[in-house]
Image 1: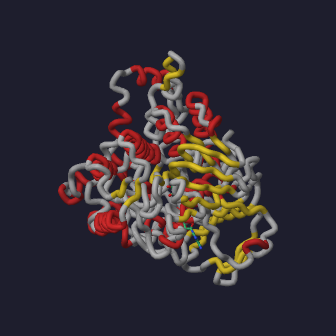
Image 2: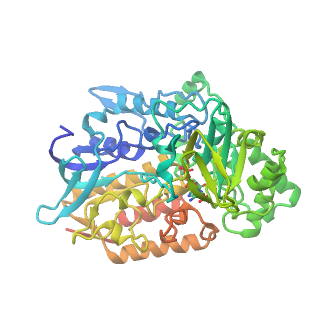
Image 3: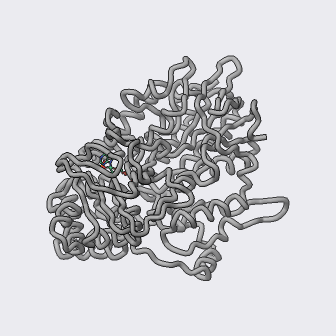
Length: 548
Ligand code: NA7
C-alpha cells in the first residue's frame, strides 16, 4: 500500500510530474520496486497546480511529450501513449491534464503513488544504508534509493508586502488558483508580475474582465506564439512514418531539446538586409524560433544581441498605440540582453493591454508599498482598487523545492544549510553527502535552458542506467565526491561566464528572491554537451563518485 504508515520500498520517487512518472516507468521495466510520494492530488506536476486563466505550455507538441513508444502488457503491445492526438500546437492546462490521464491509462502509475503526501524530512541512515523519509501527516518510508523529481517551481514566491493578508477581495498565487476558477467577468483585476504566468493571466483575463491592471517590474520581451489547431488524421499519419521516432531522438541533438537549434552563423556574418530577412523568417515562424533558432552568438555577444532587441522593439512597438504603455512594455533601450530572461509566448498580449480600460503600472518608477483591504498602494501614494488580485510573482525557482523538504546529509547537515551560500551538485543530479540520492530537472542541470520532457528523458535515462549498472556490479552505496562537486560548479560557472546570462537579474541567476545567492543555477552548455559529460562519468567507472 503506497499510503502505509511504515512504507518499505527499493526506490522512493518524490514528485509525479513528467520526471517522476518517467523514472517510475523506466525503473519498473528493469524490475525495480518503486513508489511515488506526490504533494498534489493528481499526476502532472506543474500541470496539476497550474489552472489559472490562460495557463498553457510554451513548447510545441509533439516536442512537449514523452518519447515512450510502446508499453508491453501481457503479450500485447499497447501503443496508447503514441496514439495521443493534440488539438492545438500549444495546449492549455486542461488538455495537458487529459494527456496525463492518458499516460496513466497506459503506465499505471497511480497504483504505486501516494497523493497529498508532503515530504518534510529525509535523512540517510548509515547503519541500514537506507533513506528514512517522513511525511507531514506522520507516515514514514524507508528506501534504498531516493529520487527527487520535484521540478523547478515547487516553492511559490510571495513578496513580503505590508498588508498582504488584509485584502478583502479574491487574491491567489498563480499556482494556487482555485480549481473551480474565479469569476472575473466585469471585475477589476490586478496582475502582479510579468513572467510567462503574468503575461498569460493578463491576456486571458482581459477578454472578460472589466479592467486589467498589470504591475510590471521588468518588461517581458515576449514573442508571438502563433497558435494553431492540429488535425488528428495528420498526426496519425505522421506516427505511421517509420522515421517518426527521430522527432524525439533529434531533441537530444539540439541545445535546448527542441526541434530546432541555433544556426551556424554569427549575427554580423550576414549583411543587414539578409539579417533582417532572417529575423523576419524566425518571427513569422513564431514560438521560440526567434530565441532558439537564431544566430549562434545571440546569447554571447552584446552587440549581436542588441540587433535582435532592435528588431523585437520595432515589431512590438508597432502593436501598441498608447505612447505611455508603449514605452513601459517595449522601451527603446533594452532592459536586459534579449533572451537572457525567459520570453513568454504571447497571444494578443500587447493589443489587450493597449485597450483603454486596461493599465500598465511601472513598479520600478512606483514600487508597490502596501496591499490594503481594497487594493494596491504604490510609492506615489496612489491606491488602485480591485476585486481580484492575481499574484504572478513566480517561484523560489530551481533550488527552493529541494531546500524546503528537510533533506539531511549523512552527518545530519541540511541541504538548505549546504546550499545557503551557493549551490553545489555533481552533474546536476547528485550531491556529496547524500548517497543513493539522484534528482532531475533541478539545480545545475539543463533545467531552465531546455524543454522539460527532453531534459527529463536525458537525465532520467542517465539515472536509470546508473542504477542498473550499480545493481549489475553489486554496488550498494554511491556518493559524489566533494572534489567532483567543486569541479562541476566551476564548469557550470565557466560556461555561464561566456554568455550574457550573468549580466541579467533573472530567476536563472537566483536574482528574483531577496537574499538568494546570485549564481548560475542551470547548466548552460546545452543538452548534447551535458549528456556527453554525464555519460563519460558513467562510462569511466562512476568517475567522481565513491562507491562501495
Ligand atoms: P517568473 O518568471 O519568476 O515571474 C515572476 C514575475 O513577478 C516577474 O515579472 C517579477 O519581476 C515579478 N515580481 C516578483 N517579485 C516582485 C515584486 N516584489 N514586485 C514586483 N514584481 C515582482 O514566474 P512565472 O510564474 O511567470 O514563470 C515561471 C516559469 O514557469 C517560467 O519561466 C516558465 O519556464 C514556466 P522581475 O522580472 O523579477 O523584475
